Image (cartoon, rainbow, N blue to C red; front, side, top):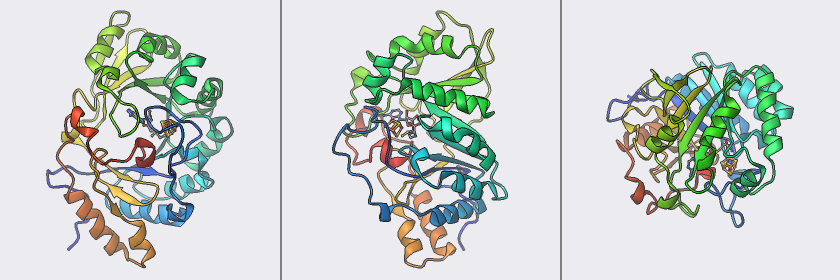
Length: 329
Ligand code: SAM
Ligand code: SF4
């Protein structure tokens, strides 16, 4: 008998699916992908729109109530509005969110809202044009800021802003981001820089949460806000402002014990842990004519092999993991 819910060996219930739509991107962020030589998945190896919607329905039937569309850059998928609309018809799915670099939001935010997208998270690592260009390897800060405004104008509230903080690169902008967002309908999430193969990560570039928070508290008064135990961030309100500031402490204070997340890569592999290189194909099960029960069996195998927690930061680079762009962050 295949379990009708997604509970792993450690009793963790999985209700959140991160679904990658593509491994392609219109930026080349240093921490995520190489500037040249990236081997992209062949188009016929990517999940098709009907396959994506079939998996969405199956996972919602297994208790998933939140799906995040990610990538690569999900707005590059030609069927994105159709995928959002298809998912929004699923009974039991409460949240359909997307993580994006915002470059295409000016043209798409309104349509995505109408299609049923409930939340947008934008990655933005610098407010300075030259620094943005250095990190993203494309000179597109203005386009990203216009995209954020478009998301706000379309009614996404709050728009979440992800900022990967790297020592000696953008650590000097912690306070600038608070000042920028202070009166906007945004939440700001500072993310610890995570090690992935071939992305130039080094411990010298790592700035832990405690130090980020200490620097912010030299200028702002933060108060802890209770959040869902499975939330990846520690959240704080900011005195005098409506915004929340969060810290994603994956490296210095891992939150694996309450993990409720599963991932599907753009080529259709289920990945139970971001840092575990074990993957199982769902795409091939579908293309070999597999039934939903066949898919559920593979999903349960992946779930039951999920580790309790990821290795310490220094050991992660030794793993044969994919880069973030190919996993779906
Ligand atoms: N292209 C979209 C974007 O950038 O928002 C979605 C995909 S991106 C891989 C998802 C998230 O992963 C982004 O917020 C990005 O900053 C984060 N990310 C990628 N590599 C990372 C790393 N080495 N450390 C921390 N966060 C990382
Ligand atoms: Fe592209 Fe997002 Fe990776 Fe930057 S973080 S290269 S925007 S997928």
